[in-house]
Length: 284
Ligand SMILES: [Zn+2]
Image 1 (cartoon, rainbow, N blue to C red):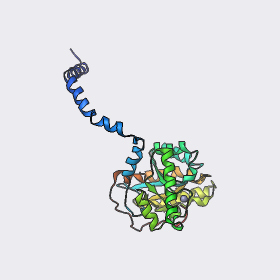
Image 2 (tube, rainbow, N blue to C red):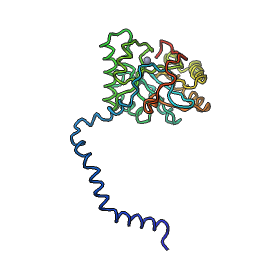
Image 3 (cartoon, helix red, strand yellow):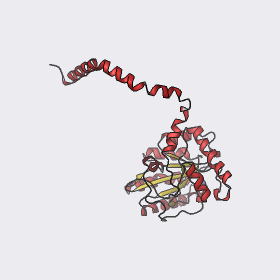
């Protein structure tokens, strides 16, 4: 007696035999219209970045809340890549959560592997200007250069253009918003400030506990965006605080999201501009 497995294999083989020529003809008919377009597409190397950019939000509103349904939390790390970025990536991966990194253009040289790791792990990469510029103090051309140099650098190293902009210090003007919209950069600030940068490289328990405490205060919000840092010189207190912060939000049934999740799903913004949890104007 033929076993069910053998019978199904036999049936599949017979079906393939019967369908061989119709299948081949169908495949030829399917491939033929595609092939000339691919052959003519000399600029296809740029296609992934173009596709990514086309899914970026175009709204000019400034956002402060995490995307997604239910309770969601977005961890954000500014001022990298830096000495502690790889440690942060390892902690995120060990806990199976994602985050968003707002990187500084002039710090990207020599950091291709770290930036690729951010991208490959499913984290989002955002533009934090070329040299941590105070955008509102600059004229239009200089602001544009700050944004474009950084985006091009990320494209060169990672292969995709950023969809997100966080102006350093959270300071921007109408020109910034117009330039960002033209470039499909969603301007995204934060709703919870851990003030981790005030530790200034200290790894003392005082700073670790303070960062944890300030981060956990975000549980009063449904969609907190938590501001932390991974500057060039590193911020060890942030690294030490991170596992406790992740565990806290997991135990409170939050889903960890990147800020790009909204761009990927392209949902209309509901909570933007609510005014709740306005960020401080320093520290980012
Ligand atoms: Zn910053």
